[in-house]
Image (cartoon, rainbow, N blue to C red; front, side, top):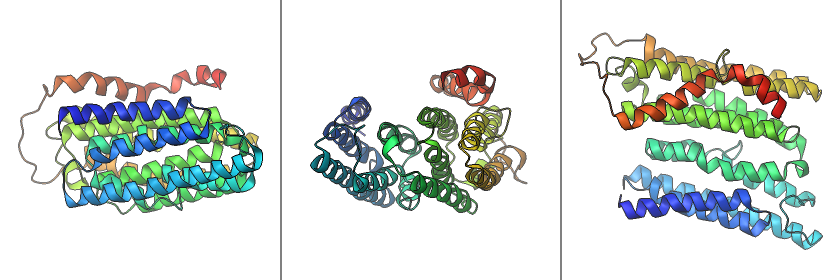
Length: 346
C-alpha cells in the first residue's frame, strides 16, 4: 500500500475516533463514525484478494446500515424532544433503534454475522484494528446514552452474545475467526453491565483491547493464521509461544491473570444488582470460551507435531516489535494485583 495512502487512512481513523468520543451532538458523533468506516475500508481491501474485497463490501454495507439507524434514531429523538444531545436520548423508539444500530456496529448477537467473515478476509493488522480501535467509538456512544437504554433488551443480547461467541468458536480452525467469536463473547460481558456500571464496561473494553493486541502482535510476528501452523511455530519462537499461551489464558479469564479482573468485577456488580441468575448464566457460558482458549493454548505450546521441521531458535527476531510485545504482554498477565486501586477508581 502506498505510504501516503496509509498515512491518510491512519490519520482519518484517528480523526474519526477523536470526533466521536469527544462530541456531544448526534451529528458530530455520526460524522466521526462515517469517517472511521471510510478510512478502514482501504485497509481491509488492500491485498486485492477476492476474500478481502468481499470482506470490505460486507463491512461497508453493515456499517452504512448501522450509521443510517443512528441518524434515524437521533432524528426521531430530536423531532419529539428538540434535543440533539447524546445524553438526552429519551424517546423509546429512538432508544430501541440506537441499541440495534450500536449492536450492528459492534457485532453483538443477532447482528454478528458480518464480523467473523470480515476478520477472516482481513490481514492480522487490520483484524487487530477492527477488534479494538473500531469498537471504541460505538462503545463510547453506548456509554454516554447508557441511562436511556432498555435493561431487558441489553441483558438478553449480552447473554445471547456470550452463548453464541463461545459456542461458534468451538469448531473453528482459523485463528482470526476464533478471535472474532472471542470478541463477540467479550462484548456480551461489556453490554450486560453497561447500564449498572458504565465505567466497568470501559475498564473491560480497555483490558480486552490490551490482551487482544498482545495476541494479534504475536500471531503477526510468527505469521500464524490457522491451528495447523500454530503447532509448528513453537520450534521457531518458543518464548513467544509461551507468552501467547499465558495471554490466551488471561483472555479466558483465569486467575491470577489480568483477564480475571473484569469478569470478577462484573459478576460482583450483577450480584449487587440482584441479577444472580444472569451472573450465573454468563459465568457458565464463559466455560465455552475457556474450552477454545485452552485448545489454542494446547496447540501453541503442549502439542508438538510428530515430524517437526528443524529450525534454528530465533532468539534475535525483529527488534522493533520486541519492546511493544513485551510491554503489552506484561500488562496482559500481571495487572490483577492492581485491582484494589482500580476498585477505588470505579
